[in-house]
Image (cartoon, rainbow, N blue to C red; front, side):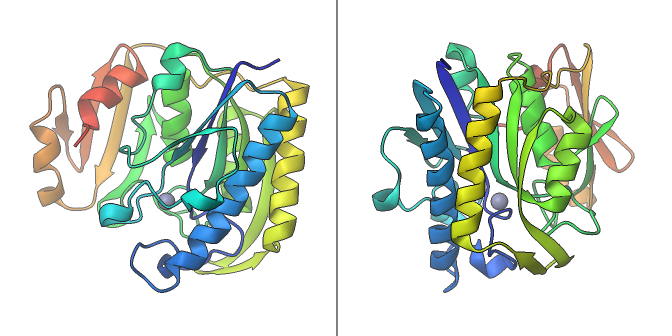
Length: 272
Ligand SMILES: [Zn+2]
């Protein structure tokens, strides 16, 4: 029996989503994107329930803009039996890790900035960031989240998204990651996709498989000291970060070093 599973969700990797208008709050197509997103989240929650997970914590990790950020799930449609975290700044909700979490699932993930076949690919900020590294390993958002989980020795068990994202996560964490590829890139804003229903069925089946098989990849936990390095597009985007403790500039990059990824991230990526 698994006591707790956390589901970290993003919107760009959901089946049927191919353009920014489907994921940006206030755009007419955003409501369609929210329905598709909520449906896939529900499929993952149903799977956790069927696998006997006692506590399911679901975190909305999609910055939709303004008051929509990190609250794109449609509350009235959410699957009962889980806790849902709304409006919490990206990659800072660590309560399940502090209290005890058996595994994390990545739902709707997207590939890192610059991935040729990555649908809507980016790393944190489309305009502000290029490459990012954790102790020398090139990472996207999934790698940053995996390092966050790894700070508490929590493994990642599953990823859903486009083919490029699933490949990226398996290359980083190993073949034990169970994947659900729900779409394929034609280019950054064009896709070949499963239907919503087929994507939900695949996610449900694969999450059940991952949680019952229980051979998770090892947590992503680089040896200390841990370095986070990010290449910033524009010098004027650096100044706010350089006021934070321990953050230094190295050419085009911001760099911060510490004893664990969480301590590094906690000095770099502040709550606002
Ligand atoms: Zn997103």
